[in-house]
Image (cartoon, rainbow, N blue to C red; front, side, top):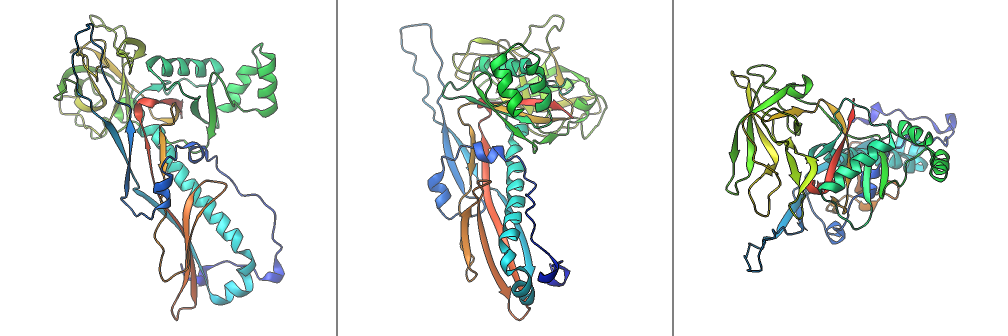
Length: 416
């Protein structure tokens, strides 16, 4: 930006105020699993990758005769594929006479802006990573009872027992939930809630508040509350369903029929069909969880008003390490699709990973790599001048990558 566009006040005409910064609620950065400390200390660049392991999966046989099964290591990759920067410039005269003693204010504001960008990106995993969800996108979530129900379904499927769960809720719903709790006859908890007007810890879950939760815009089927009927499925080599073809689309040849990360649920009570239930992730026993899944890609409807949806996770009814259904998906089963919504999340076992390696020095410019104490954002700052141009620039930038193991998480769906 040309320095002539800067709006700077002469020193004699202003007094520095003590106005606070308009902070965002950066709970995702603050609670992310940062087990990549050595990685963070290394210099890296866009595309650098680090791996973390997931627990192996096995299946039990009803016999004392050993049936050996593959011992497969499950590994997930985290790639630093995100980048952002905030930059500004001064003339030499402006820096000397106007902003020399004001640089910390500029730097602080730039860091706040950069931190909010990173926080919003990491929060986006609430929308993209989980395949299970609580809420229908229509009914408001505004009570402790609903939170308890969400946690019950989350744990019924299987949840890491070590430590408390973590919940990420929209800041807009907190007053309603706390208000509902104050109407209950629970003196000690009500005193605590009334004093803070925050949820804090409830039902072995630490609840965090965010004003940066992502919005998912559903495809036509979700927007129109379509009821989709199974026509056929496609399976992989493990006998797991990886795509489902449905009939009953709202319109033919609709490019926006299904959008990536649309959430589906098999309907109960369909004539002639068994109610679909997930098996527990460990133990493979039939749980109380309805079968839910997410679309992994956009899908258009055909001229015959059918749509083929690629699904996450693969859905398998036959026995094996990856078995997760009580019965095979059958022709005639029906699914509903969530409408557009805002997505929060419940996790356990610290499955949210954030890696922020240091960026290389910007030789020949003076460079520093620092970690902001308020936001937890590790970033680089460098500055320099354009030769002969009377322009001095300052740049704050960061590189990061985030990842979430979907089986350790469940979306919490808030109506828009």
